[in-house]
Image (cartoon, rainbow over all chains, first blue to last red):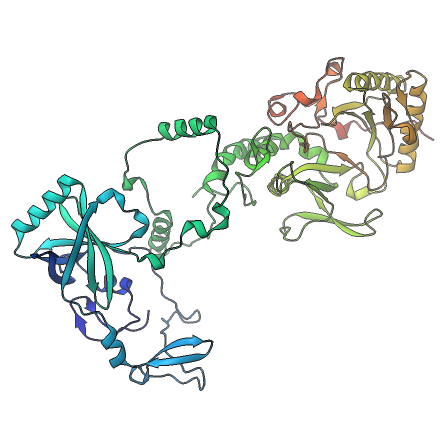
Length: 286
Length: 287
């Protein structure tokens, strides 16, 4: 990440367009502090709410160091013509129309095109919650009431009872998102959605054309297997093995233990290892 | 993390190599793990050839004599001019479990070995009689021939060994003392074959007649520099995942069903009829 400069906003830090959603999350240290304050608007009804971060990216992050002396490296913007470092104030934004050919868009022009954040979550309609495919889900936020407990509770109870969710829009920073407003563990949760134009339609993949219809027997068998494996969803059954291993490795290194790099045995190869152990024993005897 | 048991990094373990039986590469590797103790002593110190079936036996397999690109440095190789390939060949030498598992991971279902070892490449340590029935002759005719051959060799004071080819034939082998040339062992096998033609109408000893319907050819021609035999306990690229299986002579009788010796059944066999084969090297009594 580049060094982040800029003014603080309710989102954390603003540096302009290159700031990504991820950076917003990283700079928001506690869910206690809202990242946005506004209201849910349904027709003429307003429910003031605060928006809190729900998803933190906790994957392991590394920094690049200079191999020779272990010093952290920083990124700089370097002009490709004279290889000189260019300070932020001397930069403008360009859109590449053809390879190496740019149209310059200045700050005023870009600002004029920005969607106005009117601090509203505009709900257009209510739909069956389960009718939205998860492929559209992008990022979730928790909404809390802002001196609006009664109305908040009422809305939550009603949509939960009906199995519905609200669909609408929000402008977060400089982008307008489609959103779905739903209930999760006693809270109203806002999940931003992807636009249709961002998605690949599976029917455009030729590999999926002309898949053969399976026979009834095969389908019955497959359904039996699925039935046998059916259960309740529990996300706690899944762990990030890579993260755990790296954390252990870091722990060991901190204690000054010597690390011998070992590639892991693939899960599927593990059953072979039992046979291998037996054979190695026999070979030793020979 | 457990200590690594093998240098080999297995890949595509779920790939199906024998579609009819649904046998995966994982099962093939497990087979070679379980059979390794019986196989390695015979396989050792030979420049082997592989027949690989990377996409399973329903797709064309290919023979590979040269160690392929990407052969790890710990795999021993042996360089030798090949008469058939007309260039130097870097043969793989399979002296340990890791190498065997590496070839298995290459989907080398079949391992073929020459009848001599690398330290005396021109001098065979095995003589091979390849008994090959031509339909409508069948395995029963091959058994009959093998038993006649055994009797003949016993009369000469020799103790031959036998295995199924994993296809339709049988292989009779005599381990021999150091010093014979291939020309000598070839001639020996040929002469024995000729003598046997007098004892049975179905037996033929000459290549041109080997495809005559209903005959059993005693093929002596494999006793040559650079020629190979399917290794004992090697799988075959056959639909039923058969194995070239060493047998006790007592098992060699009418009704023998070579197709019953396959990837599932062979690891369960306790005896190892070819055990210490190379410690029983025999004098052919040639001058």
